[in-house]
Length: 530
Ligand code: TNX
Image (cartoon, rainbow, N blue to C red; front, side, top):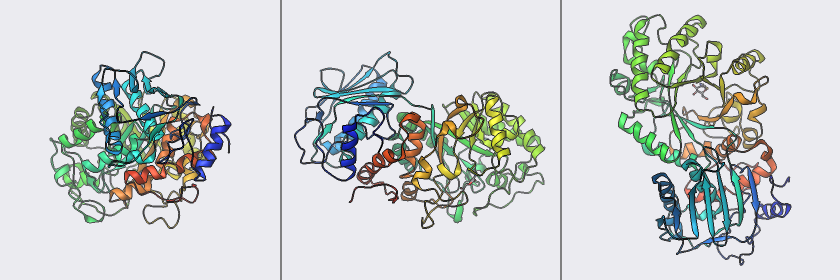
């Protein structure tokens, strides 16, 4: 095994011991009888720099969480207390006074928008960041430095030890996303919040909600009410579907923001629009509304490109959606428009993108937009495969050279709905089988030929939900692949090493068990025995 980036060989040895299930004393702490703390270098995503040093810190009944006198820092402190109180059973007051303990400190220093520094020693743990987002990410690191049982919801014995040393950390990419398709199957606000909490642990900062498709329209639009009430009334398999009221959508947005995730809403167009076409006959070229659709075919629906009402409709939808979306982006889909001619597709995109700009938002679209004229500042989301044609890859690369930023979601690596193996009970296999190593072991910076590194905005893991219904389904497909997506988005390329990663990943298993997350026990990962 290659020792972890800037991690001394001794720690590498300790990691191997831990992976082999051997008990491990942290630093100079007395041999623990309870659960062992995690070594400083075992965090996912791998921090930019890790320097183990000195003695550990131990959280006790007397520990305070000390925050700067700012509402955002206090909120991050309360969030941390919310994680630690149930399992430690300690009061852990959040305070602006005192000394020692866990300190969350905002500082003008060089940490960037999301970076932080974590210092741990016998007298305390200090997380320093320029912005609250950095404090929040530092708190996620601190969580992972504590024993897995810290994630339990009832009091555990501890001890609650954090290894000594310093972590300096900031992300490789600014855009680190996960997409949830709430159209093929509808997921409640509570289910979305649950997924947000899982994403936050791995420093994912964007939640892309696929809000409309052939099988369901999931967001209320006041000026076109039947979209939600009729277009949202079913889902794949014929279940009752559902939609978010504006208040519910805003609740998701607020909750995501409290975990430092930005919501990117997607209205897919001009294809994937049967739910809208079924709700309003006038949106169809022939004026006839098709029936609602509960199957899983793609590519059969299209908005009517020549009709003016199409753009009046989209102006209303985008205006109302932009008004309840504080984030920078609106995703306009644009994939699999197999029932729209190429000329119509180009005309359509030329008319719709300015509407997004008119309401102050930036366009994201699936990478087929690179076959039209992406507007300045637009991002294209690449969902091709290794064996996507060279011509299609070249089209994407050319757009990237001309300034279109890319979000990488290669379907044969990052699609969380792909089966792991032939035996995976859920998911699809049209992009191939995607085991954990295949998902993790590539470099977004060197993936598409001819794409300048500066054009990569980041990565995203989409979860399409034709076969996904319950929380347990989401968890099983996302874990253990999601943390790998997060690591490719966050960690410097120099830390990339499958053999080291699989050991760190294995150590997450008990944490997921403590959190109630059921995951795929991939044979590629040396999970501790249960
Ligand atoms: C392709 S990828 C789709 C979705 C399906 C998914 C299933 C993309 C942009 N479109 O409509 O749900 O495959 O894996």
